[in-house]
Length: 291
Length: 232
Ligand SMILES: Nc1ncnc2c1ncn2[C@@H]1O[C@H](COP(=O)(O)OP(=O)(O)OP(=O)(O)O)[C@@H](O)[C@H]1O
Ligand SMILES: [Mg+2]
Image 1 (spheres, chains in turn red, purple):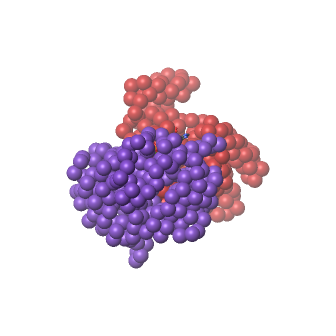
Image 2 (cartoon, chains in turn blue, cyan):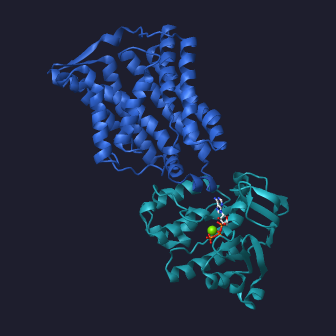
Image 3 (cartoon, protein in one colour):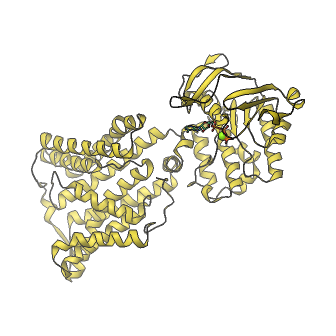
């Protein structure tokens, strides 16, 4: 039963990281920009929701506003930062450094606007549990499970079947041609970052509800998400999501077999096995650009 | 529609490749554009559509200066490019590629070349509708690239070796279609080709470039009286 509970906990935390991974991957595969500040938007929207709840906004209203804020922040980040850097033909390294800078700024803005402390949502249902045959799932965990499955499925369907999703894939696979066929790649990049950032607000808020909000730990979450993206196959949304769950389950269950401090090593172990023996990732991707 | 280049100088970065290239292209005309590898053919077309800046000289479309306009504004005016290499979206199916490009280039009433028109014009494409572009043969990809370049309301199409990878009978077929489109819709075309005889068959004018400088610019009749190869 302990194993089962650890397994379930791993799946839930994998789903949350999966949302970070999928949203990061969607933008990275499209633009090639290593958007470290994704972690900043994750934190920023989470604290924003916490603040809203604090001033009396109902939780789901706060979540929706955090998602909206994430979307706007993402759109502006592409338009005001990455697009300008790209115009000056900045190298990927310069883009990444700029992104790290933005992350730092966002973390500081959180500290100034909201609080520099580790805080918890003041919600009574946070600690309520569902029990299903001996396994217990907290309400926030259930929320993470359901919302991540819905969001990832929706994003995959959007990418495959909607006109905008196809346009994004077209731009991804040949940005030069997209320019001369009027697919407006610059606009598409901004839309993609808006979508990604809106999505990343969800795990930001929900992990915050499930555990606590921490101003400076989001980079670690992003690191796991990036590992999952690479091991899952860059450009494969499904791969990033499934790999996030696999990594989180291993990390969670490893606690039962070895000292807790080894759990991160276990994650990297899997990562290394994957890049050595299956460098193309978990699933072969049909959605990527040549880097 | 008249496209005119006056003493065009263009290149990459600070380097100039084109050396005062001048030409005029009228409504419905086809200009065959020849030259050795690295002569500056692609560079000329890139300057016309705006992928590289014009360093000196002028580009005029119906008398309007367009050499300072961004790519999008030139596309709006009906300049279209079939680029060198892969002019397709490898991840998308033929149908999706055409749908997306049509959606962004065709207006409900007014477009000259709509989705149905390209399928009608290129029946092979209709059969490949559900194939993934990146998984098709080189020749099939080329036909799709041609279709994508046509969608919308082209007035001047810039074609970079449209025949690359096509089997011989399809080359003739494609060139016949280019001629037909130009004549029927009053579209003009610049046709970069290494298959000189095939291109000559549909051309009105011929232009030869050698190391960035135009060395021949004349009517087809004039071109037929000379040995074109001596200009390479
Ligand atoms: N991206 C680039 N950066 C710098 N120089 C370039 C670039 N592209 C082309 N050149 C140079 O410009 C010159 C003309 O090249 P261009 O591509 O116009 O030739 P072309 O006539 O189209 O040849 P081909 O028949 O091989 O396609 C060449 O000397 C080439 O080295
Ligand atoms: Mg060329």
